[in-house]
Image (cartoon, rainbow, N blue to C red; front, side, top):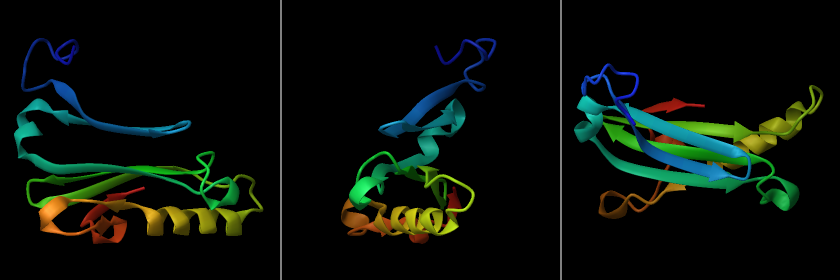
Length: 121
């Protein structure tokens, strides 16, 4: 119930806008009720970059949306482990960054993370 912790005030309620998962990764985006009508073009993607460069044990999930006049992209990732494996993490990051894309229909063929005006990793 989205009004459970909002004292029954619909302007304080949050609702789930989108969610995406990849094995153990989960990303959820919630929106405050008064703003929901101003969100459009919500798209999700998941990219596995683990074993053989494609399994889901490593990778990222992302949600892209347009909020008023701004495009926002939020990414949740699980990258290579161990302090000394900086090169592995950088390679995983680059793969997620380059392989993530959003099919946004007639407005554009494909949009990637770099195209967003605001990105949060």
